[in-house]
Amino acid sequence: MTNTSETTTTPTGRVFAYCRVSTADQATENQAQEIAAAGFNVLPQRIVQESISGSVEAGKRPGFAELLIKMEPGDILIVTKLDRLGRNAMDVRATVDNLTAKGIKVHCLALGGVDLTSSAGRMTMQVISAVAEFERDLIIERTQASIKRAKTEGKTFGRPQALTIEQQQAVMQKLREQAVNISELAREFNTTRQTILRVRDRMQGGVQG
Image (cartoon, rainbow, N blue to C red; front, side, top):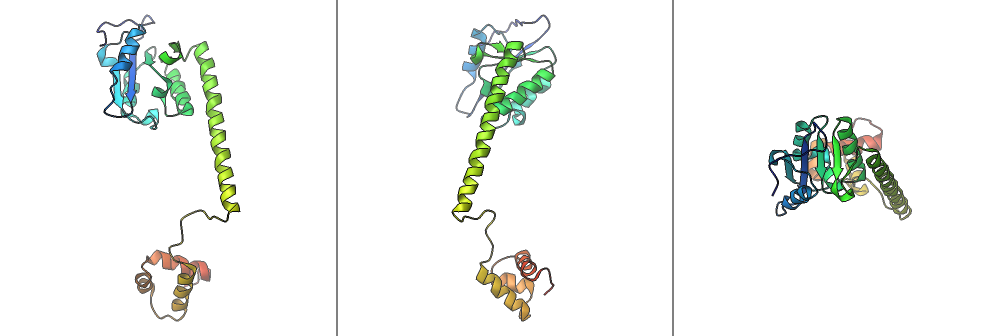
């Protein structure tokens, strides 16, 4: 249960809470209770609760977007964990930077309730940024290694050809003989006119047939 009275940590700031769960069969009440137990008393209308996958960027979550509209400079946002603020370390950092630019303080209970916009909080965010950069570089490195390995094994990339080499040669032969038109060829080979045109242009250098 949340208290109906409000106590803020600044003279003028209002306190908001953002509580998120991944699926509809989960409940946000535990998060609200954890925030209240930490000493942050939030008015019910200032608790935004949302059921949405954590893989969705914070800025694309309807509930979080609603929260951004409500909040003003000097307000305080409370979350229980960092993953409430984004789908990964980079998204969390972007979200905190956005809130900081708006003059909004951000407290995370999992980090001891530290204000992420304070000096100590900024140090924490620097660590998060370093982790985010590491994650990004690691993903790039693994992707490049996978592509190199696949090329070594003779694998090809991109969309498969709609027609085999033999079928393309048969199409060109029919076009040279002017036996059928583009539409008839498309029906015969169970493909589209665009595919037949691409084959013709690729093999004849764009010469009309």
